[in-house]
Length: 120
Image 1: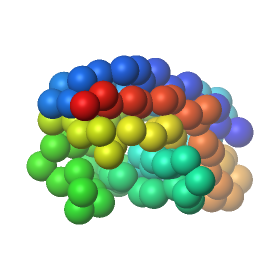
Image 2: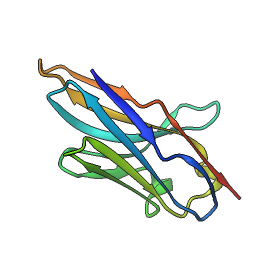
Image 3: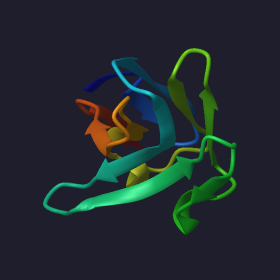
């Protein structure tokens, strides 16, 4: 199993920046795709950004040019640098990690979620 611990959320004014971190720990063979999702009140989770083990990234259109996802494979940690934040970015942000066990089973884990609030 893989456990994820998120940090870095908070309250910021519009135009400000925040950096989210998500550290993975536990027993696994490899970590594959790492991603950040967000959930608005009453809505499903939306994929914000993802990064493969090779470093290929993808973003939802609404954050392109403002958010940057990165990972430190040595620390099994994924980051989301959020710049030029807007009130509409207000949501609970979750990290998701797809991993492979030592038995070759592919599974995924979710972080506990961290609140990001952007005031206007």
